[in-house]
Length: 165
Image (cartoon, rainbow, N blue to C red; front, side, top):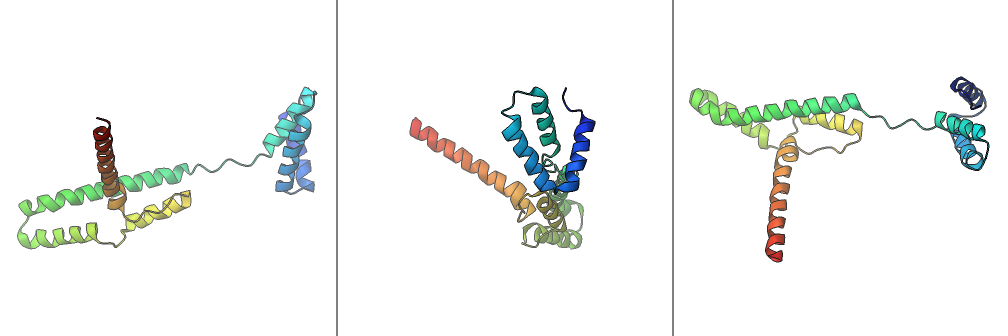
């Protein structure tokens, strides 16, 4: 009869009293590989597999909350960029010149200088905590780079078509 979960957990507790977690994990893996893989005793094989599974390393963290937070930051940042882009072209028609010129100047400065936006800093901190690479700038990463790749892909398709045709 195979070992129950409760019995396996008791074995784990006893082993943990005598061995460090890494040594116990190594021992259980080796027992499962050397003894469990070669035995004809199905009960022993299942018990060793169960112990090996109990000592298996924890799966990498999924960072679900951080990924959701990053998606929300990207969505919020995208909406701000779009609103600023629309405001840049609409404000001259709605406001007097002494109001819209400084606002449009500020929008241009924010959009096209190398100063990193606080939302980009926030996204970069979330990205590094998840293990993703940092981005240089929001507009360049999410707007300019995809457009450049699209243009390159179309140009390479045209070159392939002209060489084949």
